[in-house]
Amino acid sequence: ITISRRMGSGARIVAAKLAQELGWSLWDRELLEAVAQDAHVSKRVVEAFDERAVSEIEALARSMLGDYEVGGFLYLKHLARAVATIAKLGNAIILGRGANLLLPQAMNIRIDASDERRIANMMAYEQLTRREAEEKIHRSDRERLEYLISTFGRDKVENARYDLTIWMDEFDTDDAVEIIKTALKAWCRHREERRR
Image (cartoon, rainbow, N blue to C red):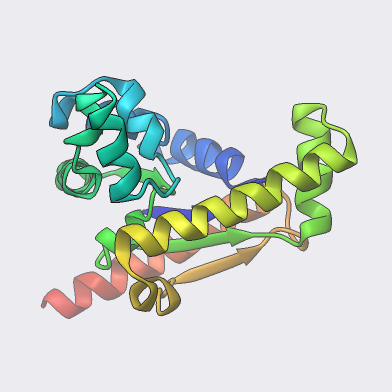
């Protein structure tokens, strides 16, 4: 399963609970460690690219300033290899990082919410003021979109498809987990029927 989301939608909480109930592994920040291991670079380098567009010019400038690790790092190549390895292991939930674009054969889910709900969540969970929450989600939305477009291309991002989209203004965490579990059963059944 891949889960795409915007900051403050509650997707991380849903993914964690779903992973626990299914007994599956959850790959969120853990994916960064896997990418770093695959690339033989420090986690710091991967974090510099994580869901944030780093242009070739910026990478070149960093290498010219002596940060050779960042300059020679091919993020997408290592991300794709790490995601493919996780997919082969199976029984995994990958949160974000454009995994849905790398694994179109997975069950791809989108969890989202209105700006108002996202702001309220950020205020509650991160103890931010309304203004801080608004600024943080808008910056995150902008950076994530830039990251996806620069990493995967505008056409692929604009035409991304999801097997299931959950609008969290209408559901709580437990509802979302049950919806996904029900959809997963049907999705697996249909895939099995197609194999026959």
